[in-house]
Amino acid sequence: MKTDVKRRVKALQRKLARDLEMARKNAFIAYASTVAIAYFVGELEPGEDLMDAYLRGLEYDSLETLCRDLAQVVKTGSSELQLRLGRAVCKLFKRFNLGVENLPPDHAGYYEPMLKIVNHLPEEWRDWIDEAVDKAVETERQTKKIFREVEKLTGVRFA
Image (cartoon, rainbow, N blue to C red; front, side, top):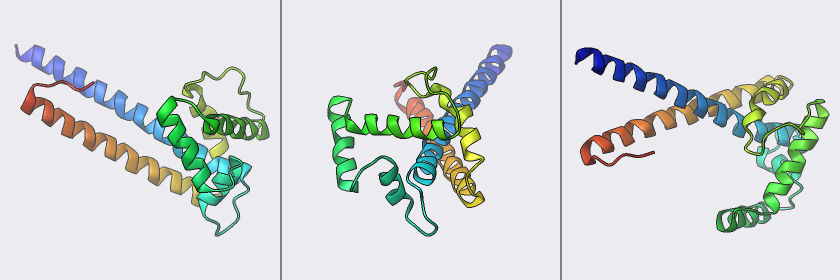
């Protein structure tokens, strides 16, 4: 019986570690692509707001227009935002001679190429990405902890 419990605990610990590693990679891709698009495609200037250059990299004239397209994604599952993001990623990858033709549509293959691109960013932006990823992973860890406690209290399983 104790062996079964130990084995189950170890399996859960391994799953948690895998989940957190996946959360780290997903957060890295999100933050790194935002900064890289702003810096390399939107030509981020020193002292300029990151979002202004990101909007420029996505060829938006205003945050309002981007938000409208984001709302469309939520409503229908697709919008101009996805097309613009795809174009910006293609420009970014082309700048670094990285092929986009073999990448899956779910962004699963973006991690390694984004690591290469991020190495070309100034140190301040690499540090910013690292801090943002650490915060996102900690939030994910805390969220999982809360859900586990709720599961214990209610008997309801969360995916």
